[in-house]
Length: 442
Image 1 (cartoon, rainbow, N blue to C red):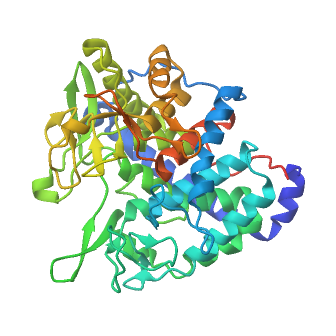
Image 2: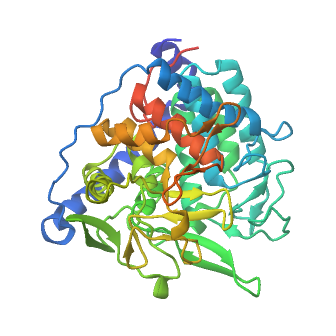
């Protein structure tokens, strides 16, 4: 279908889309003006980036094989009754973050020609209709987790809970990435997207321009807390800005910025400490990779992403240990860890969400290796891909990574790993995924 035909089909949505685009442009412009005023001394963003981004190019047959392997995960883990996908292979639960990975994977699979448009439309329609039916936490925003079979609110152990466990502003922000793509590029799904968000109270998600999450304390009392740290905060805020929402504080890179020297690289970190703010700052690859492959970096995120990448490359050059760190599920207790460039006062620290030491599980992350490779295409990212390219089950999808200490695969298979791999390969062929105007095909 030509661009002209798409515009004709979408004519009832043009004013709506124009408003979204104008709001996005205004917010970004104002924020960048404010950043420029602070840059010289406060942000210390002196350009060090010297790697040209890889230009879009057709995928090789090997890369297409990688993409098809990633799609196997979603074929295997789609729940017929709801259309939602399990967050971990065979585990019938999902978060909005993992559902976002599924929707973005479906968009990538359609664009890469792995699935036909008819299957794409069926999957998207069923998923959106299910999301429109879920019970909201406190009647305001989606709960942090749902049972993929029944849509019931659950806790992180997939146990039903009448009250829910809270909402995540970061997860909600990520979900808006595929929803914006659908509105702009697949207008036949616009009404379904509107139905998903129609009952959401976005005012509860924000406070004075910052992101706000919700959780229950030990007495089941709702607590509202600022959510998001450097990297994740700005990434999530970008999608919210497309709705014209006030995310002015969340979009600022400099308000809690500090630099940590790691192997001679000034790595950007968040100055908010967990002892005071009750949340860890994880310097990992994932938010910077997602910002690049979904939105295309702005000048600051491009520089920060490079520094986070460069520190990992420098660790390899100094120690011989290939390094591509991010948050990941693992195939044994404690089942989820943060492999970081820096957190809790330590470089190359691996911890659980509670801050417990998990250094035994430090890993090369498959999704991080793939993401950096599709963005940069350097001799170092070639080494990373050589290390992870066989980390998959030909019938189930990609494993999460490779343990540093043992050299054995981390055989956890997840929606997030396989979704980001599909996104990264889609970026390789087409460039950033969130673009208002691209020519669509039947």
